[in-house]
Picture (tube, rainbow, N blue to C red):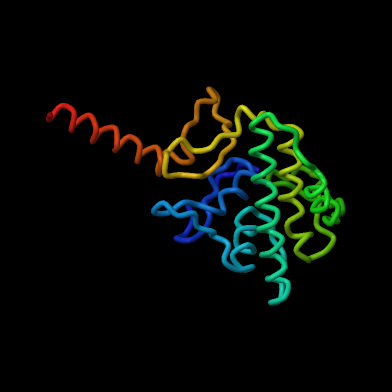
Length: 198
């Protein structure tokens, strides 16, 4: 779930969460003080799923609309679950279970990139539930196995992105060092220089 990925094109959700559940939350970003939904269409969701490596046939127009609706629903639910769990509160599981129960999959034997045999799960359908199923399962896995001390939100005040801190020291502070980390460093540098100039 934490493969190295290419930088997003303008308007594409960043894949900096190091966990599909975090990347799901990061399909909403903040720009100039406003929250922006990077999923405007079902095609946007399809492109995001493809970037995660969840390839599937493109749905028709009605399927695209259903995909967008279900993806936004899963994202809102995930946000509520993560925030509750992070706060140490009990989580309501019925809605997530609905997403999980709608996901039908089958075992599939394949070779990995090194030629070793691996057992994978493949969606048994191509509807929105099947396409989003692995992401819903990732959310469930995070709730069961995740260390919520490592589930963090970027410390930059203008950023709302989430990540799972897989660093050895568990001291990651930024969604991306190239983005928010550098913005913070630049702000600190400007502050130091203005303090010494005074």
